[in-house]
Image 1 (cartoon, rainbow over the protein chains, first blue to last red):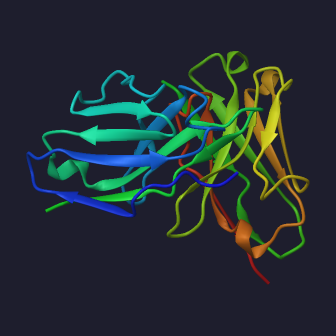
Image 2: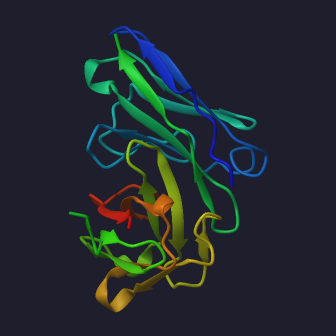
Image 3: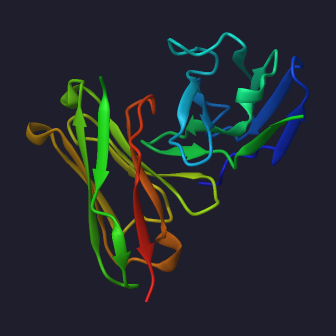
Length: 110
Length: 114
């Protein structure tokens, strides 16, 4: 059970688009369409932003979108806003009732 | 409104035990799997354990397998984590989360130190 690999940091200017990658293996990301993404502001609990690769929960801005190709999932934030500055984590089902989170990415709005 | 409230955290010596609880409300508890996820100070999220609605399927992270036991009491709408043989590296904020990680509690802090 190794953590999924994410870039440590990604930055962008307001209005720009950024993409965060999440690389796993054929045993987790590559095998299941059960990748989700979470936003976490300092001192707060994580918030679900994307589930089942590309689905958005009610209330989440459509500026957030998800995709997957092979063993790598991606989260794209378009029209970057100051409030998007936070840590982001991916998570994948890994079979046999196991889950694995990503290493986390700090998003900075310049 | 879905609410998850963790309790039971605290300061404990290495090698000792602690039992965490998570009280759920606002949804039909016995319809959903539940999870424990932890976050060490300044670090990322780590999935710890998950349990199906009927306790028939249970999974543990390698880091806690053999030391931690997850359980639930559907009659009490409660989730538990029995933590034995605690180590310094188990120090973290422990969250409980609903099945698809769509709802999270605010966490309970466990500190393992002599």
